[in-house]
Image (tube, rainbow, N blue to C red; front, top):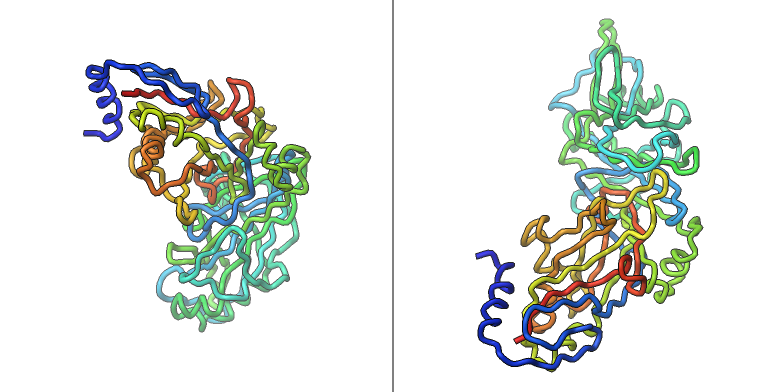
Length: 438
């Protein structure tokens, strides 16, 4: 039997046998003291937004590159650090190979921001080993040679929906960054260092791909699949025989890669954001709250009186449904849209470590847990019934606090401003409870 129907079944059975009414303590709740299924949406919530500590960005499904200005969240810059690998088990450039050109290609899987902007992309050679034994975070950095490998110091626009034509062949959307002839010749001249991937990666430790600036008001970030066949360092050359060839240094699943992200919140022009997130004035969260992907901002939510609300009933309460409701109170800025999905992190009571809620899609399903943006209601809903029931029964390792974050924060760039618990009914952060007492 699906465990999520148990509270409803139990509540129905209890309704047949219960015949007396009970008074209910209303600390933090607007509860009705009668047997049956009751509803409350007045649970006391304490919420405020803070900067994220760290998120792991090692070898995720996508990497982020770009430079963006957000009037609410300030400036953000995403940089890719990545190893590359040989194509195949042997390399033979022939006699006296000479570079024709060398191009770094980056597949575009999605984007965020203004594609009419252009971003200054710079490519550097990494000077230290990337290790598969290490975890890299959004605030990690790697030493690199400060001299750009670019053929020219230019900016790049992206066309995420437009195929790229190369020599009459059509390819899926990607960015092409031409690198210097000297770098290409350097690779050709070190064929002896390409006997194996390990030997090659000792010689060439990888690239730092940075986004130093943008044109226009907004800029953009794009997500790239580094292990895509479209992502590579493509070396075009000819040799003494006159043969013109191409060799790709790809980024396979064994290559270590991560995204480094820098946020400059001093560039925000939103006073609530500055006071709450930057200056730590938690009381601002009563009305306005924030979340941001890319390891940026999370919202901490506590239900301070929930466990005591049913004390007079000796916890004889069945929670039929508990939903956390988040309402988007800010219209989307031009080019800066809301996240398609949010997520909740449970917090372990004894040490503050992150855990899944029992209702999380990890244990249930995404359709049950929720968190997807409803475009008509401008809201997100999470079903947290079992978590609330366990809190009331004091039968959990979880605390009465959770974190609200953007789902897939390490591979997304979106953000949200939403209503705090003290706003008007249709916009406030709230917990909706349907319950039965017996």
